[in-house]
Image 1 (cartoon, rainbow, N blue to C red):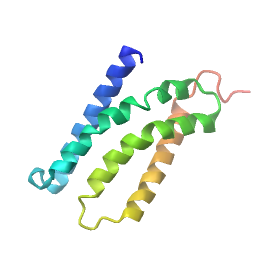
Image 2 (tube, one colour; image 1 turned 90 degrees about the vertical axis):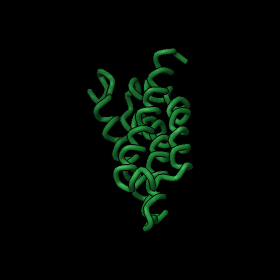
Image 3 (cartoon, rainbow, N blue to C red; image 1 turned 45 degrees about the horizontal axis):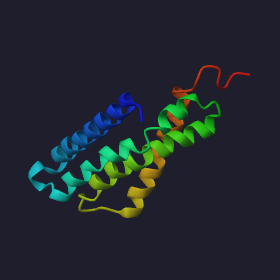
Amino acid sequence: MNPVVLRTALITGAVIGVLNIVFTGVQYGFEMLPVWFYLAQLLLIPAMVLPMRLFPQAAVTTDYLRRAGLFAMGWAVPYAIYKFSADALNPLFSPVSSLASYVLLVLVFALLFAAIRRPPGAGKR
């Protein structure tokens, strides 16, 4: 893997983990966050490294739905860790509603990224 891409993945995973800790800590109180929550944030680092090759591939894919699918697959695991680790702390946690909002948001972001990050000449006839 390209050193720049690897560094980007590591930094992105760490930043997302820190932001999740900050946002969740502000919401529930830092003293209420269990140890497993902090450890789960460490999973974001390999979760960003493994699918990172999908993002450059998606950026050059001309077909919109295929590009959206690549973006969705790239964000699926990191966002799952981010979302479900924070949602599980809620005393009213509902796995079904959490999963539904997860799927919806991954689809929305994939479609948005595919529209914004289209390669030159894509979509033109």
